[in-house]
Length: 239
Image (cartoon, rainbow, N blue to C red; front, side, top):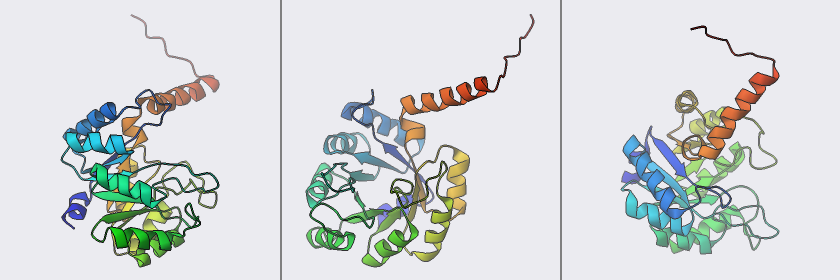
């Protein structure tokens, strides 16, 4: 429980890079995690056995670990089976994040069944529920998850498809669950992070806005392109 106390009102930095990202490298992710630690992050969220292993050697912060793996015929991809859970724990993660949506995991296993499997094998491991709706968050709470995160809001076809963080979900769940509610998803600015805290978040996760230069650059370029399309002209400063 000391790990959970370390997260309170803090910034968790998600250090992940997809296979097609120029920064896709366990070495690079470990260095980014170290930079996040020096910058004041309270924890790191990391994807993949090798990345978790590398980051564990580099930082002293708690690590929320997961493994993204797609199984044909099933939508859940965040640590969707006990095999991925085993690897996350073996790599040295302090908290295991898993898909806790209503979609069945590989083998037609429900979230409730999956949680029971994990808890029986790892009775003391902290388990985070990545959910997309209020109902999924409430179910995860009553199942016994140690933390609940809004990670998947907007990433299931039945959750709100919005450009900003799901502040409504954060506020509703924070009032009705008695475990740490983690705000994650589309947090781009410090102001949005503060708003998430004001809505009741225990901690906030920021990933892309900090750790993915490709997407940060694209965001700036898109804004500039939109500005140009409106016919705006640069002001000429005379010397």
